[in-house]
Length: 455
Image (cartoon, rainbow, N blue to C red; front, side):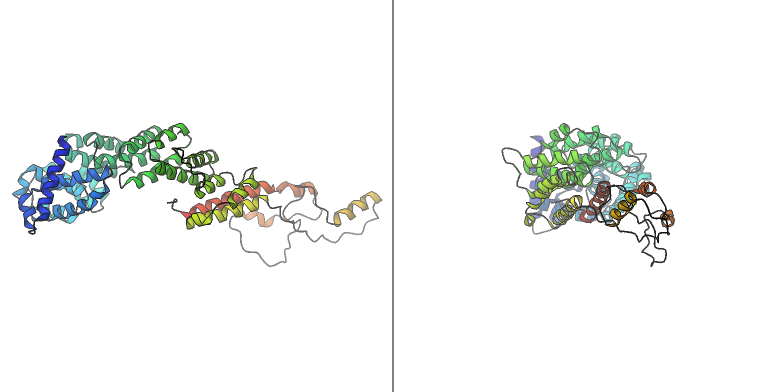
């Protein structure tokens, strides 16, 4: 109740200031800390899912910027106004305004060190920002400033010191629960936990985010990290835990998350995860199934595109309504159909080498002569008994395009005409294995081509 009343009071002051035709009234009526506090309250409403408050955030940033540009040394004698200046900077404020205002303020060395770190951070100098902020403990600062500083330090250390970054993000959540700071700290914790391979931390942060901030305008960034985390940590996160987290989402968001997981898992060759995610996407909730969703059909088919049921998969792919797919998924469907066709296609006929002139020898026995005639008639050899390479390489032929993927020694491998059949079969490539290898290479290329996840 107290928080709601404070929010209403601040918003009322804002409306009073903006309704006046004189722009100077806002500067005369509200102190910098009051404007910044109003900005924080609006941002917290946005983090909770109130997207209608976003225009108000833009207006508040504009008003706060104008007020801080006009502030003088007398204004900053109030510690609340100087802290508000720093919070404004870390809330998406103008770095030029922050730097100019700090130059007019007289404050203690610790506050000036924080100001320097914030300015470096805003101007894209992470190394200098880390050095300036390293000795500052966010837990020793007033809560509003400490929470933002913990978030900034945690973000700066995420790459080089992920364990320390997670500790700082925990402090940010502790100092500012239910706010945009907590939303950002949870969202960043999810990504860092993935790089650390910490499945327990990933699951906890994801659960807390979905419980509290699923409707934040920044939730799409969480969704990206969540899907990537499920793929990266699939061996450590049970399907039951995954289902527990997604069950807190509304049906449409849950479906999209499972579709994205199914797509990534299929392309990465994680058949079990892809099949599970596809089934959950098709299953739906509240008796509303998604079995007609062409994306679910496509991704579930990808997970079995090289399986023993390939004919069933081809039939399933053929029934997908292409008009309901995005351009990227239509390209994926085309590639999947081509791959499925190659898997069931018979092996290409092997080239027949021109035999070397046979030396004159005595006439063979009848049984041997009959066997030679049969071979010359072109009957198919026993599968796997003949190498896919011709027995003799035509050395005088025009040079082929270089194959950079093959070892240099392959070019010198020439079998003599008298080589026994067993020697020729030593480098035989099984057609099924070759098809599977080619399929995986094509799927990798498809993933690179499509890039973005489906919308």
